[in-house]
Length: 82
Image 1 (cartoon, rainbow, N blue to C red):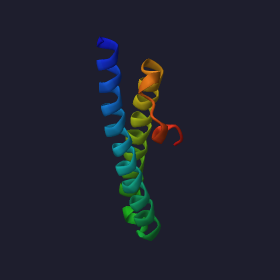
Image 2 (cartoon, rainbow, N blue to C red; image 1 turned 90 degrees about the vertical axis):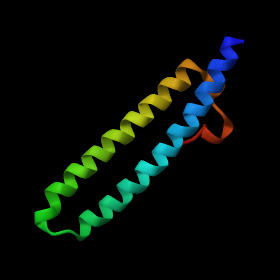
Image 3 (tube, one colour; image 1 turned 30 degrees about the vertical axis):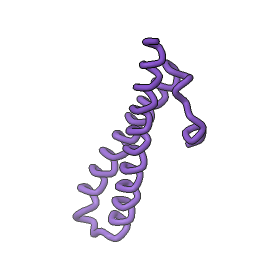
């Protein structure tokens, strides 16, 4: 029974993490677009923002991968591919 609870919680967390990945990916896309249009002066700030967003995205994927390893039954068909 506790295993079922763990799987249910993992599914909920995976759903939230996939939402975060989508959100961060959208922000990253917009930031890359802005960087192409920005002046040299704003390039360093844009670079830092892009780096931070990539780091957040990497961390979200790391957490997703960890949950998949720990709770393989939590993997639903909608999240099989990235």
